[in-house]
Length: 296
Length: 216
Image 1 (spheres, helix red, strand yellow):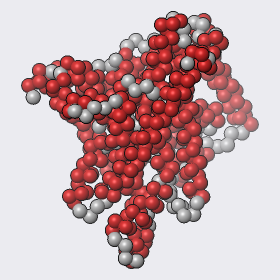
Image 2 (cartoon, one colour):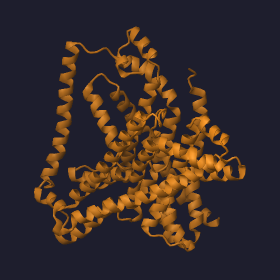
Image 3 (tube, rainbow over the protein chains, first blue to last red):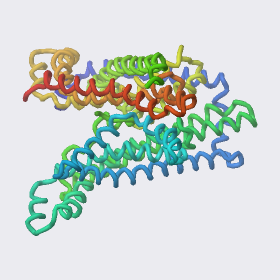
Image 4 (cartoon, chains in turn purple, blue):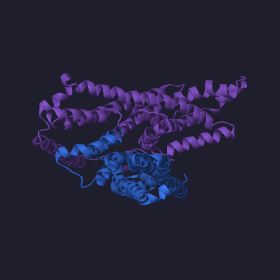
């Protein structure tokens, strides 16, 4: 249903009313922003000198923030690769003809989707060292992200495999391929390709979730901002706190927006691509996009 | 087991905190998300733009960052939430509302155009056709996605633990220091606490879905 069915195209009087209303609304929003900026100004948060620290290489701030961005991307990349590989295996396992493979794999997938991601990460961080598996904050975060996302990706890839035309596997069997050959050479490559935009969208979710490293003390962007604030407070007093927090938050948002854009471009391209056509609507369900634990 | 029995009041309080966090933010997010969804299909371009901006911004912001700003950032514009709990509710509601809006919008798009056309033909205006014809049907079709958003929200409440709200996950961190030997048991209890919320929800959603589904 297109939204335009819901209302008539406004006439000249309606358009004028809308324009006046929009202008008043805009003024109101601007007033709010102005009020916030004014309060910031009164508190001295807008002084250029305070913001200059973000670009002042002598204080090590830009280097640390850049390093934190790299660390954040690193943990997300490790998690993404491991989760995709394991997710593909789990997806194949869940489609197995043998109940002794299918049932435990389904149980694993459902369990990891049902537990909050933060609890998984804390499990890796607090519990595994107790039973003799030492994990750094990086390891715990990467492992937690992997365990959760492999379950989500397994479901996505499974949906991808099931969506492939039956003729593909039938012709695979017809030319004498075995079951595992049909799966690895015919179905999984097509499924991954078909699901590529969704996989990228999941990377955005994963990157968002890497911010949970803040809670277990992994030096991702937010935690780095926090630790920078502590060092700088020690040197200069608490005058750079707000600026550093804003910088860390903004970097997260900008990187995520860029990745979302990439996902959208890929989706548009794959829709144009005849081989990967019939993707239908390749979008993550809203609950998966929320991160931190999808549906049960 | 006796360990769990000893700490039962702690666990119960933590569970109730998690539950109330989820319920209160769920209601707020539902209201805000519905308003946003209505804005996204409204005749006024400025409202559409504002809602789109909101959704894009919050969908691409980690929940931890939202928490972080509400907990540490807004003091710089001289604002302050009365309590940690309310900070957490605000963060969860603002974040989840974007996803509620997206789920609802997909539901509104799933309502056949004929329904809205018929409403318009009867002479209902935008507000009337939205509230009496389109949204009621949209809500029924989005029961599964909205339910999943609710479950995700229930799990996302765990992030509040990082910002000094004494929920189940915070209990985990607290007991991991004092009760190192019983840690496995604590984990089981905490996971069970979340499952007590999510599993019945999943069941209720599937029942509701079957009851409310519109056969087209």
